[in-house]
Image (spheres, rainbow, N blue to C red):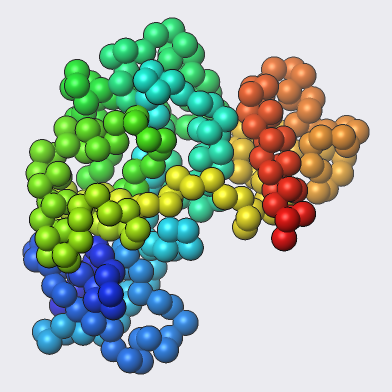
Length: 287
């Protein structure tokens, strides 16, 4: 029995890269279609010589939007300038990734055009506890560090448009753009199509996940109780709250509000929390 990883799903066919890097076009056995697990991009599988998926191997994790499995980490890319960093958008995306319970690395790209405000932002997110790297595809800054972060992992790249995700990937491995087109030729789809998640291999055990929809900001499946736990810096202060659950807005004796007053929590992060909380409340009203 062969083993591999699902890199694409299109029109009922699953494209599986085996341990040697060869791509196979496969179908799914009927008994698997009836199981409670549908086959996802990122799934590790066993498949037969005649092109049928026989078994889905145990998953590390899975997501609904996008429908993918076994992501080891997310590289969340923002740009030092052009476009300037939108901190609220950044915080919203971090909340989505935290909710998926996937490790995240914040990548500040275009660092060669950064300034003191860029370094202040980097220091801020490091102080919160996030891992931050700085890169520039044009100036070749931090490319080796980024490349090392990708080794032996399935990595999803996320971030706003225009921050240079594709340029970074091409700087990491110049074959990446060619491979994107090559796989697209195999499945008869345009290489800029973003309707479905795809995997592209840097080597036989290092993959980049092109995840359309990963950056979509939707909080429909995040509860008001869950939200505070998605701000990791809150965890040191929640025990000081008098009420449980505490929503850290109007309640008396709130550890989070005390930490805010004492400058132990950044005001912009608390503001982001209250904005997202209102977004969740408004979505509940609509439904």
